[in-house]
Length: 258
Length: 249
Ligand SMILES: Nc1ncnc2c1ncn2[C@@H]1O[C@H](COP(=O)(O)OP(=O)(O)OP(=O)(O)O)[C@@H](O)[C@H]1O
Ligand SMILES: [Mg+2]
Image (cartoon, rainbow over all chains, first blue to last red; front, side, top):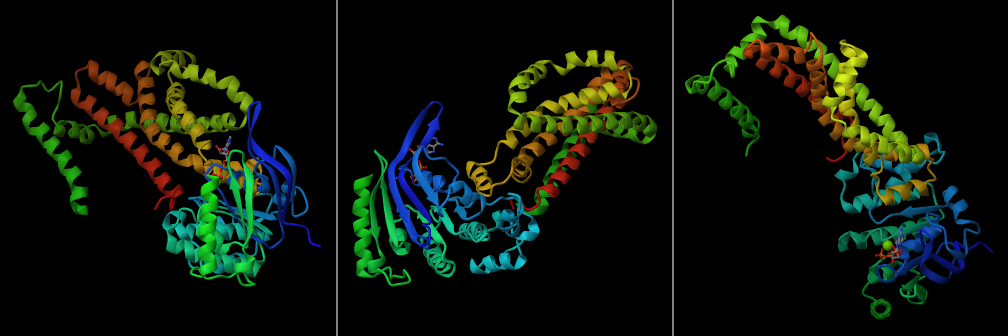
């Protein structure tokens, strides 16, 4: 059996402020099999970003157990087996699109030559960025910026992609298009994706499963498997009655959580 | 407004003031030793080119050298303070204290120590540039956003890589804004140094011309010093445009 992408047991996460620790989420038991597309929903401030940070090893847990790809989160991060996409894209304004996508090849003990130009071209084509190589971030649209951020996260072929509301600031049309593109990238690469969003439609449309977090106390409230109402390759139609009903059900659940 | 108007309007503005100065001033009865006309000031540059040049060059050298040394030292200290916590905690208050000493009060001591040559003027110009650049650079080095910091941690970047590829570029806008200011203050530093003790330089010329009621020379020296500031400023702006090409277009 393959190791799970992410496995936690009574995971306890939060922040340490001086002497006291502030709990954000506790009793988190989560099993994300490799290759899954998991959506994370929850009221603002409930700890969605914090959970992704712990999985990414940007933050240490306060207690409990967590394994990423069968080992410590730090090992997965150091081996570039986990990738992160931030809400604000986080492109460096002094680097061109190409230089931003190549950033992973010039830091962290990497040599520029370790990243073949063909691989960069491949991810750029995958995200529809070909031809924009020498643009600066300020010369891109919001959607293009997010595409560059995803390309940069994908260039090292991570096995897990952690995405923190990457499309939160985009208009609906752009977001819908990027949803479809991300789905096809996921089908092509088989990457495990943990995707935080505020949009219930987005969660139901893309996810194989949806995890809803609640606040006070921060817990996993509900995990819903959507595979029964979707086709085998996790495709669905937005106007499908089962999908529409699911969106309504999730909305009720989330209203209770907040 | 069309582009031509945008460019020509300031030229018109400056020329109109010069014209008013030239033609209305003599009517006001203000004696020429207080305010000579623009043509008389300009005449100094033509008839006494040597005098202006021999005094301009030392001041330019001092200002430029002070600018370079002061800002370089400030950048190096900023990096030290930004990355060595103990040194920052131990020495930053001392630096803050030094900054409260007025440069005019400090200058005579520097002249006493280093004599009447160019060195003390370079040091005064350097000191005057040092502090604003230090403070701006420290703030600039810390100005990366938290998601940028997390991106570099995600990529397991070393401290040096994070400095080179994130903190340093992030510090550039603030660094250049203080270099622009320093381009003017370096010239002030050099001139102040020359006031206190020098026989050459625009500062010395200003003092001599004042005591001899040679107001045309005095004004010519003032024009020369501000030209020096403008040249230094233009140099900084040119380098900034090159370095920051593409940043915010
Ligand atoms: N650096 C920090 N130190 C202390 N507390 C923090 C820190 N960052 C976040 N928190 C707190 O942790 C809790 C969870 O924050 P988190 O950012 O994970 O929420 P979120 O679910 O991602 O919210 P949103 O949907 O608004 O992004 C919040 O109450 C927040 O105030
Ligand atoms: Mg968040």
